[in-house]
Image (tube, rainbow, N blue to C red; front, side, top):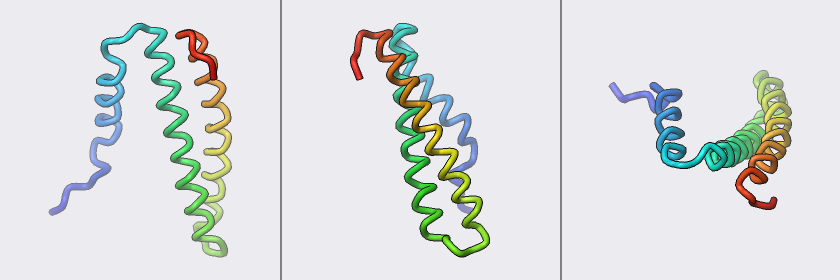
Length: 93
């Protein structure tokens, strides 16, 4: 049986985040987490937009379109979080 690549996805994500944020200051960790959030949100929006476009007129289109709309909002909110966290480490956005 082939392993499911989504098995233990939350655990894998937690380990990756811990590795990336492990040895830095709280301010740096906040900035790094905000950047990760923003990049993930951008990728989610890209995937949802493509999924909705590919499924227009089908039964699953509404779910994809809803995900696209939510993801767009997450991109906007995560950009604001990234910019606020950037100020903690003296970076301009």
